Length: 168
Ligand code: NI
Image (cartoon, rainbow, N blue to C red; front, side, top):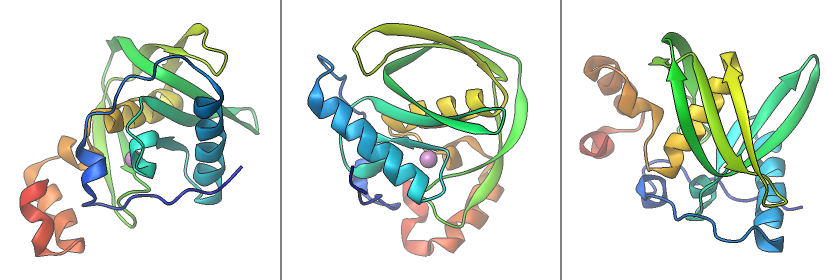
């Protein structure tokens, strides 16, 4: 496994819509393992391939089962159901030092391929639902700061300097 370089805002890779992953093979598995290592060594709880400059619809998320962390890989994830609304404080490895409350659906159903190329379905709530939605957004070039109020966004933008204001 290797640690990959995380793209930091305003890197254009973060704004591109990622391509569908075709057949799940060794390249996809290696990428997923490297992404898991990168996520964990950065103390993150999720990572999307565009954040390491790869235009592929692959995300890794950390699931907590009791005190154990289990890294899940979702290939071509598709959120098929959303329910409820909840506020939760989010951050992003591509926007270091920034966090904000974001309102999103509380319960989701997501379908994806696993590392064997088999389809699976998860009904998620709480932190896991939150992470999956945040990471799936990355695949469409969407950042969490796109989902908050204008004034709050303006304040966050200041941390990244006036130069990037117009791009949010
Ligand atoms: Ni993020």
